[in-house]
Length: 533
Image (cartoon, rainbow, N blue to C red; front, side):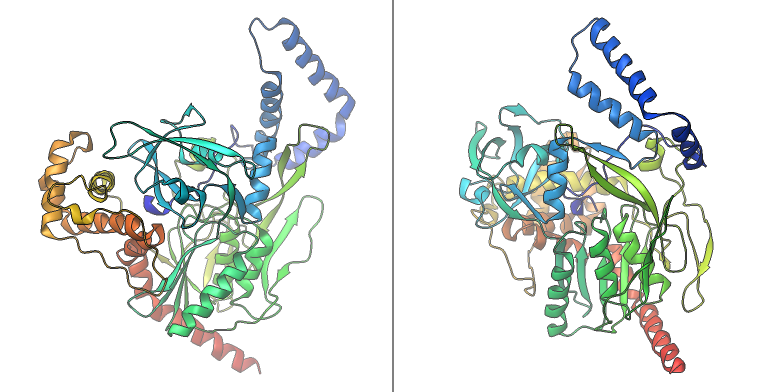
């Protein structure tokens, strides 16, 4: 699923977890020590470092690191945002940013352009699928992550950014100067009808200011095509605005049903309740994985507790701490995000996974099996558990085949050459300019034996992929699919490539097979309501 992970990531923040019961200990400590005494101690340490440190020091960076260190000692999600990060957060939550109009991702050790949004500065500047970004404003980004490059490319409206890219078929790197302009950043990455007649909505880019409007429009268009059910894909969704998560869950619930409860150290506010009625009633499946976090877990938990949806996939991340952003009024324009409360599902399950005995590495990257916490039951009496994210009703692990990873990278590099007209005998695959397709149009890309033969020859020459022609033949269908997906991305855009990938997505295919179970939930729910009246 690396193909889906475009820009959207969960940032690794802070240093270590805190021990159980720390909130109580902190309350006593903070009451016992006056702010003046703490400020004096920090000021003295800061002055000593400034006066006696042997080397040169960036005082602003040192001070910001001190703030981050303090917050990291609280929990893995409390964090300091410098002015640029804070401005970026506000832009993303408003579903707008000033960029150039490209989708990027890290492939084979470098960040590449996967698609260019039509009628944007990037298209006007001539950027293309497969361009490898070497530098941004003369700063080398060869070893940078996708998120780091994206942050550097974005900036103030109408300002210029210079990109240096490597393009297949060009002897020297190309340099272009592009004016930053508003670029849409929708929450929904894809919405279309699967061949099975099931509607698919990929809500993978977080919950932002436009999420519920996007969802309503997507469902309206899909219902017009006729559907026997729907898959709401929340895999890799990192969360976002609580208000939007409540509205998304409300879209499928009955008025007044609890969506989520928020309990803080000092107070507990009334639970958030559904504000609208289920307008559809069709069977619903929600896909989640270990990168589904926060707001996406609120939606999945609410729909599971009320037996409105069948949850399919892998256990979610388990991020149930409420983050409140507090601007620092007397600083440089930054802010702090503090964990001020915890999220609980309608049945009373705690979403937050335990972090008290984990390093940040283990918390974010080396996860084992989720530990069951408090037990609860759904409206229909099914057992569910808290304290470890949202457990799926139907567990479908992600396929883990190292050979597929090698084919993934090799197919991308091969397609870069293929669509640039650099593969002998296959010049008709050259893409001069992508042509986006409608969401209801079928995406067709024929990968014939001539293409597969050329791929075998390509990997035989390119030893860095550690892939032999025999390896490709042993995984022939996956090899064909990967090339098909990349060619579709180059010809029609990243959404088209994702659609081909989704048609072969094993988790999605098995989720669709579970539709009868989702239908049974809906029927049981309907009968229960009839008995109440």
